[in-house]
Image (cartoon, rainbow, N blue to C red; front, side):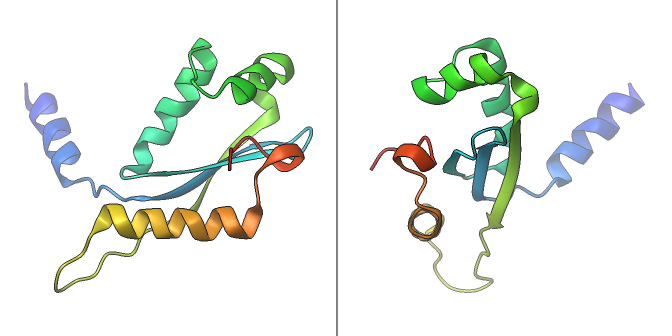
Length: 115
């Protein structure tokens, strides 16, 4: 029972970070850029792809074609939260995602995102 309490405390103490991540096909260089309010959910995205249940059809198709070893998952940037005053996490995360989409242009032959 002590182990269960310890794990529960670790979970509660774990810092939840929002940010931008990419999934990169290392065979053809295509990338998918997305944001999340909890970067730990990136593992969930990987699980979806492995289960064949991703809603991103092109990404899922190439995952099936090239295999999981042909893809890398990387955190591009963690959202820095303001210490004081009002902070709209959702809005700031959207702006951060726009910055990365503009910078990397993951559309068409370059990626899996849609304009």
